[in-house]
Image (cartoon, rainbow, N blue to C red; front, side, top):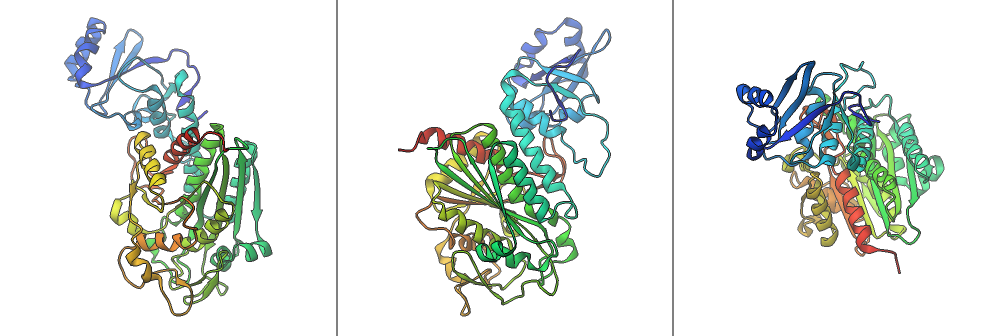
Length: 459
């Protein structure tokens, strides 16, 4: 089980979650001395406020203020705010035990691959109704581990193995495409990875939850490190480029939740695992690349490599005629300028799919924001030397132009969505420690669950 959670703990203390409008009632139900103590300390139940309750043997419990917060983050700071190693059980109150457990577990996480663990977090007894929350937290924390791993530890080979391991654990299959097969079947992926001594790969995971279920295709950008290629990034621009495989981590987290939930769908997950490096074999500006769909792309910026990787993945996925096709990628800085770090930019050619994603994200506190696929910018990708360029010469609407590029590789008949996400927390907040983050993964799982329930078996 994840750090910060336990099935049972001897001597677990009660944790009382309180809202301001219920404070008087809560105090009235406490022993007189405990109520007097809280009044004396000025406890008002504001969001994030914690009060330890004294008892004959030391601690008798704790009260935590929720304010108006209804998200998991109200409980996201408790594992490291309550006494190290202490054990707690949720008391009755105005909260959802599953959300509380999710927030607690996500807040307890800390990267530990190369840094000794600090003091142990406080642990929470998992309520009976929180099994799915634990599953979601485990999938999110596994994705965080992948994103946080240094590029020296997680190259294309290691990322492909992670996909295969996930498939094996849940009864799926995984084909890893490399070498000549990659050159022929995924030529744009091969071109992006040509500059690195660590050879590119495409991992193809398949899993069946119901033979007659809808086919859900998820594609993840897995650029394990991005130097920018010959259009080299500045040193400051490379500092977080180990996270450029964040899209792959997000689709793997979503896939793990789908498989562990045994949703009645057929799942296809594609991860393009590459390193965009600098060498004599790296792709060059103004090279023209083949793609799986047959379109020729002129490379006018080697640092716009993620869309080249996704182009081949989307083309392969489209050939399978999925009922929905979704890609996730840390694709553009323009999306972050527009929406900041927490909101993935959603682009879609299908209003129904976009609506489902937005509704699912809002329902599980994993939001996103829809952006336009503005046809008026389509011509910005024109070039006299190939079918299209991988970038526009105009320094505007970068996220929109990138999405328009991807749309060229998806047949209009297929419902498709693209998530341009950050995959990182710049600073530690309740439930969201600094480092890798799987933005959108819980929303994807919730949307797929709802869509599969509404769809029922295929005719």
